[in-house]
Length: 199
Image 1 (cartoon, rainbow, N blue to C red):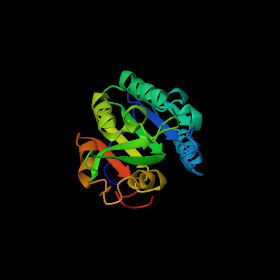
Image 2: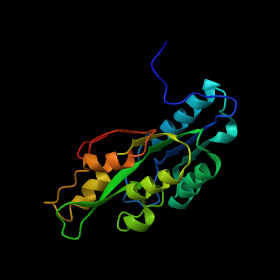
Image 3: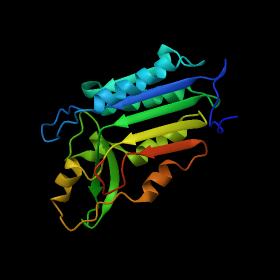
Image 4: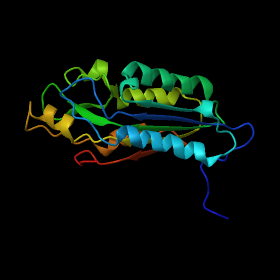
């Protein structure tokens, strides 16, 4: 027998896939990511080619570039909550910039964000998707098996732009932030980089 599986498909067990790829941004200050949208497409195509039981065209959804606004991403995460019962599995993939938000003291990171198409780097709290918010949303999804891939770099161009305001700040995304995201049983988180690394 092969290695143990975290989830096995079946006639009454479905797989739900949400892939988000943001290579182009509405804010000209945010540099483009040449491969993000193509990577999200490849993820969806890979799943669709598997031909596994419980995976239908209706259960795979991709948001690319201008489709991937904060509102639409959160709407599709809500779609997962409404459609994926406990016995199902959920796969969520993000390819985009990441950004830290500095604490008022400027000494460290207060929050961590995924930067979607309409994110304003000067207003991350209302235009970005915070990892804390994402953690709460994942808890509301009933599916017990969840795989989340974050292909987002927090020390890249957006993070460096924020750091310029307080160059002595420590912008490292601590391991604890990712551990909190993966706290629930049955959830696996894969990240492209550590807090200070370029993805």
